[in-house]
Image 1 (tube, rainbow, N blue to C red):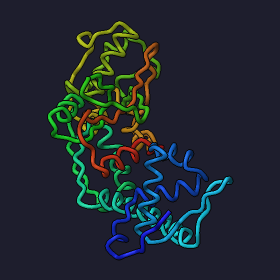
Image 2: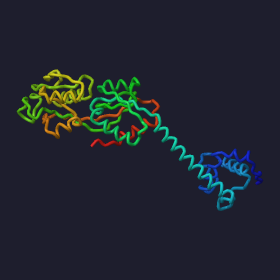
Image 3: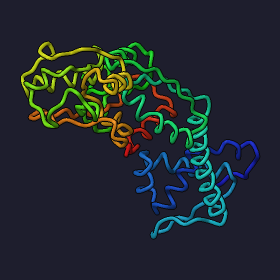
Image 4: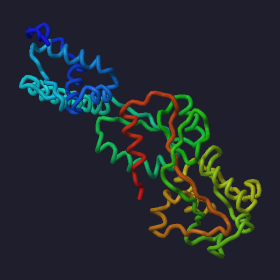
Length: 312
């Protein structure tokens, strides 16, 4: 085989494919195995190696019955080719990291409970790791959060219910439980364990229509106790867990509140919990986002961070 002398013009025509072919050939030990690894024909690989030899103006490999070996020129080029590919991967990784860390702003739509009691600490931890990624949050009821995601008013959402919608991805995150609470010195209570009949007599403070908490209360009471909302003594409806807690503390009534919202009050003995016999109110908070929309790297970083985040 005649190899042309190297010139600058021919050397600059060396391609990644040719270098990749040389690396595969040496690592696999034969043209057959190397071409299989690269998903090309043996003739195409042979042509790549020949063009590479012509580009550098030197023979690069020796063939024998035992396979292929490198000439001194081949060894030099092979070593540099490996460095080139390592640098390419490092550059790719650095660019990906740079893209994920620069100019990113995430628009979050969240329902009140995760937005008030979980996201502040989560976002603090996230920003320590990715300070260049900015966050903008809007809070509303779960129904409005879902609609905001569908209308592209929010990119990532958090709600207190599973979303069964063909255009939305819904991922369960943190388990929650609604607890029936009253003031520790309550004028309403004679017992700490009550049944459905007693519940219907108590003044009840409810969350607003469209909230995931309200939906869970309604479905759980009807499923477990056969009690509809219309049978309850609802004295007030409020738009956040904080407002509900203030109303309970003021003696307006009792209420079902997320355990995430009660840590401070229960630890300080401000509220007492009541057991409602035969009824369980458990759920998950969900991460949601719209299907088939292009997620930037900073969105993906945030989603993966959220999925791994431990609340307690």
